[in-house]
Amino acid sequence: MTSKHDVSVLFVCLGNICRSPLGEGVLAHRLDQEGLSDRVRVDSAGTGAWHEGEPPDPRSIDVATRHGITLRGRARLVRVGDFQEFDYVFAMDGSNLRDLRYLESESDGGAALSLFRAFDPHQDGDLDVPDPYYGGPDGFDLMFEMVDRTCAAFVEHLLSELST
Image (tube, rainbow, N blue to C red; front, top):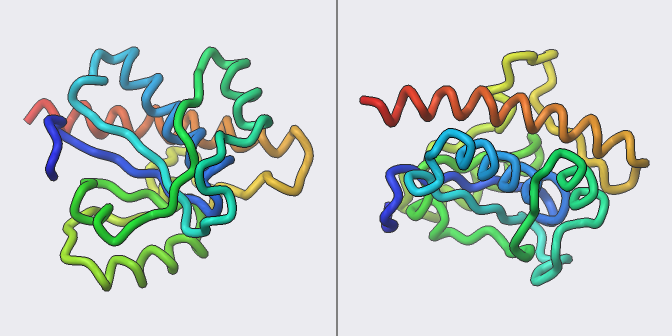
């Protein structure tokens, strides 16, 4: 890790405009509530470059705003160097995890790569965060619920990790 933070976390989805920026925003919000913002760096990226430089999807911004969370940043493409820069790299679904495993094989990084919902206390057998891009607003609400409860569980994990 190359930053002043104790831990760094990268969320990755396909275009970096729906799921991963929401993960980044929710985790940053929860870390702020726990007084851990200065100890944990959070970012997001995408495996595809279609939306590079764009802000998050307005529907992700809306669902976050309704829960008191601000989404910042612009879409970027995940880089080989991210596996050296981040401690945790979270894929939002199995397809992105496969792409990330390939990219990781090109790096010397030591990031812990996994599906984000591996930390979800309410797993239902499917660890994907469904992509709400082509659906209606209810998909964004469902996504928020999954991301929020999984971030809450991950913060508990971090509290334990940072206390040692």
